[in-house]
Length: 193
Image (cartoon, rainbow, N blue to C red; front, side):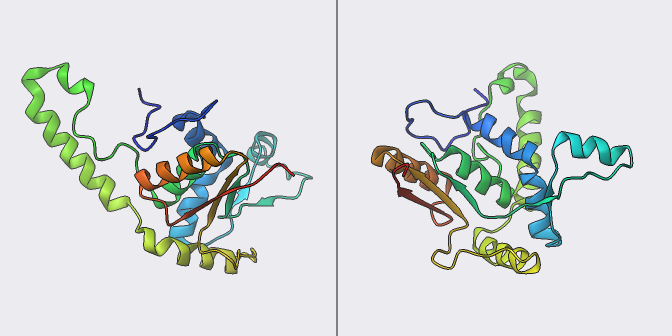
């Protein structure tokens, strides 16, 4: 299934589908923030649907814009899906990138070689757009400083996930490691209080 993006090695109770988490992030403007962090460091503001419609009509909104922060906390992270998808988006990493076999390749067996060549070309384009994990903390710092966002001093991780269940935290850590993001996400057990 397309919702399985290759990093979830275990599941928890009531898991969030990976594709749904990615969609929610995209709707929130997270992907726009990801582009700005790498290209300009200009401020990115969250816009709800009403604000966007007013802007399209040339009417200014009465609500104050909300500056988007590159730091993300998921207080009920479960298996870490939301913070993992956020990190993948900021790095422009594509899920399931390392797969070599897709079901659609069996639809036209006589064009298998052409499909493999097309897949190889597509992967080359994807790799060219990926950002290095080592550069992300510096880019987040630049964006934060330019836009007067207070950075978390006690952690190099821009992403945080907490959960009441120790088992969920362990699962989240394993999933983040499988995604190659364990150095960017800090998971910890925390009660609701």
